[in-house]
Picture (spheres, one colour):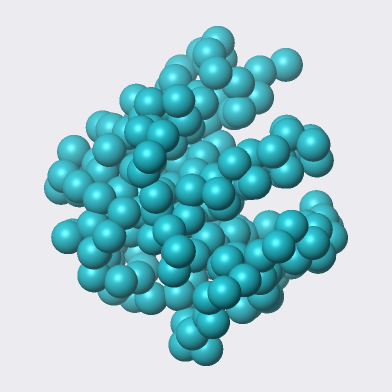
Length: 205
């Protein structure tokens, strides 16, 4: 059975557009089968985009597991001076994100596979609705790989369903030598902020 985290998408195409209306920005997303959250903005991503921390005006940002691109495009529109890398293993997801960025005037979005991101690049912001269903071991490897790419004062923000292990994931993250703090909880989802241990997170969202 095909999954949205497969590299190659064999599912028949059925593109559908939907609008994303946030308090500060709005845009349209073209979605497709075989890519996460076909035809609508999922509840977890909605929580992240509405209640995630305010972004700095510029810097190097990452949307990890970009799907059709709603997180990357929101970040790009909110911080036009930033460079936003949109990373996904799924070929159809990357094509959709690239097209959606052009459609919405988000010229500061760069779409890539994980291996195409320069190895010396460090990120000020990493936002993700991570692919929990890839399994615990693979998820842990994914997160530790990209946490290591945070700048010294960088921050990762994750949205995870409570019933899919958000609280245990937060506990595991704290065991890895970083600070993982819950900053919001709504409709069965947790918003988790991850920072290096020597960084004092701002109390402001």
